[in-house]
Image 1 (cartoon, rainbow, N blue to C red):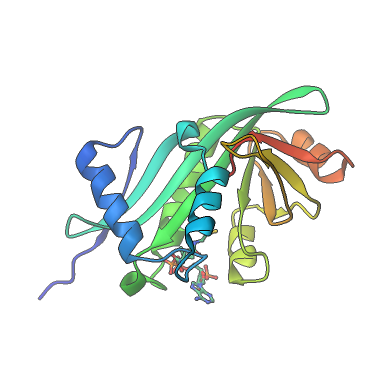
Image 2 (image 1 turned 30 degrees about the horizontal axis):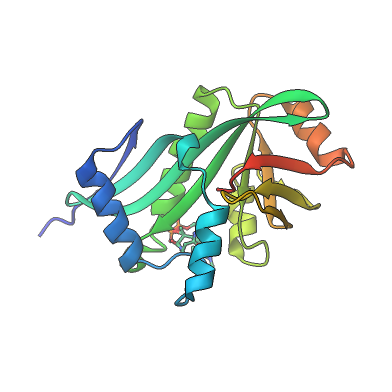
Length: 193
Ligand SMILES: CC(C)(COP(=O)(O)OP(=O)(O)OC[C@H]1O[C@@H](n2cnc3c(N)ncnc32)[C@H](O)[C@@H]1OP(=O)(O)O)[C@@H](O)C(=O)NCCC(=O)NCCS
């Protein structure tokens, strides 16, 4: 029997059926922060990652018409050193547990980086577990650890400070270097991704 191949597609918006499939996919395939969460942890996660309005593209990997991988490409204008910066981003990166280590995330990531380029984001930001293989993997796409804290507001208005950020230059090497070398803290605005 011929093995079916993986399709990578990019969407500007998703229909209700796709949104429902993604929700099921996420339930069945735990993310980075894996283990069962307490009610408080779920609340905090919702407060922090409240940026769905800034999703510009969805990258979906499918096999036999089933979703086996997702990435969301974000975009938001932030202010850094009194300058408007078009900040792109990568988030919601996940592959089905039984389809991992076959290059699916890498294929989706290539498509996501192309989107950031098409959108003319100046720099891109993501957060990840910097102590895992992910830091080196995102490094393949130009991301380096921010190496300083960054801040953002949750949906509730609560201010969060984290240290797990990575950034990559997209269209502006100058802004990328400015963010990395400046002592100013990167403030994402409202919502992490
Ligand atoms: C992270 C994740 C998306 C990777 O998906 P994947 O399709 O298995 O990744 P790929 O097969 O494209 O592999 C990507 C690279 O990571 C490496 N890799 C993948 N899983 C790994 C693991 N568990 N340990 C070490 N290296 C790993 C691969 O060898 C590959 O490296 P290479 O590009 O140098 O060859 C998947 O493991 C996942 O969904 N994890 C849970 C959610 C998560 O952590 N998301 C990231 C949030 S920032």
